[in-house]
Every structure is written in structure tokens, then in C-alpha cells.
Amino acid sequence: MPGTHFLTNCPRCGYVANAQSIDGLTVKVCCKMCGYEGTIPHPDLKDGAWRTG
Image 1: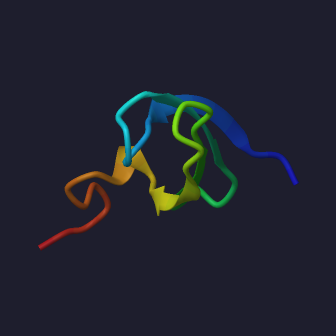
Image 2: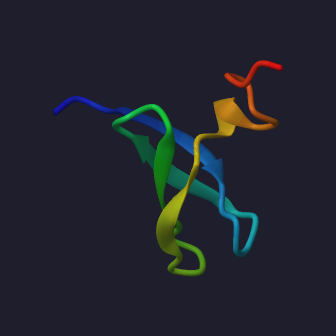
């Protein structure tokens, strides 16, 4: 399944980390600086970009 790879800031240490999004809603983050691996909400959806009302 194709996904989108990009760079984002690690939520733990703030260093630049590799990120992969497959579904467009969540991002899997892998930080080589502190070893963090986890899932965060997609940065493009910050502040509820798709929410109305």
C-alpha cells in the first residue's frame, strides 16, 4: 500500500524525525535521536482542519 513519507518534529525531543502516513489521518513517527516510535495525528489536520461548525 503506498504511503506518504515526510519529515516532522519528534513529539518527545523536538528533533527532525521520519514520518509515514498511509491513511491520511495518522502518522507513524520514528526518531533516530531519542528512539521514539509512535503514532500521532497528521500535522495537516492540526486544529481540526476537516471539522466544520
